[in-house]
Length: 313
Image 1: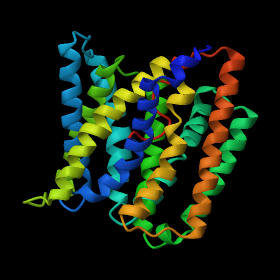
Image 2 (image 1 turned 90 degrees about the horizontal axis):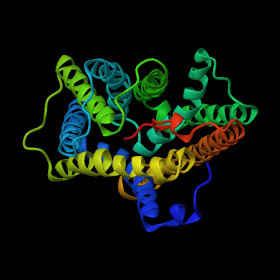
Image 3 (image 1 turned 90 degrees about the vertical axis):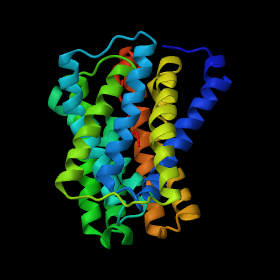
Image 4 (image 1 turned 45 degrees about the vertical axis):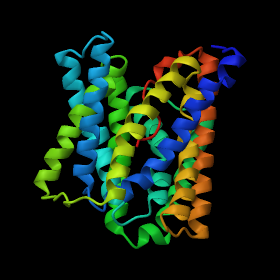
């Protein structure tokens, strides 16, 4: 569907793009800063539990329809996979792996999602296959770099995160649809947050009291900016522009995360890892171009892909 150019270049759209690019690109470094006082699963559980509750209350205040029992069940399944396994393992991996490298690795989620859709009869186009091959080549090069080679546990954790997020994304479309609008994402956050807190208890995590000031600021940043403001911006982009532009953060975030990690987090990135990052981004761009051409050719509705292509950190 063609959009009016003024919609795409309006201040609102530019602001929403900046939010999804810069905020979601910076949240991975915020996770690392918060780890000094908030252990990974506890950090993610409290963050998503609070953000989801606030989002649900906001929806109720605006008289939006609340999720049904079946939709809450679906939210439990999807929240367990995408937030419990996805974001929980992302935070866990950042204990030993640079935040910039983690976000580059999980940028392959769009590629894995396309592959997972094969089980439901959705075959990728030739351009999408090319994007998948390029992206996977970049990830293989990245996994052989110093950052992941020095932390096998971190590599395993981020690998589980990508598989879990991709599986949840596909199931949310084909088997366990969430409630429409903010209610669906709120219920996913609440259920995922509860699962993350259960995991935190099972593995014996301990909250460090008193928390460091920087860790508190980082945690609040994740709740307010990462889970509420950026989410609202993403939904606005989907409604006013379409999937292609709304999901452009998936190839912008790795670059921003790497730059922030090096500039403010004191993280070291080798030339091989920069090269791998560039290859991964090229693969994601190629994939999105292929999706765009395929949707235009088939007159596919833009609202079909109502979940982000990569983890909403």
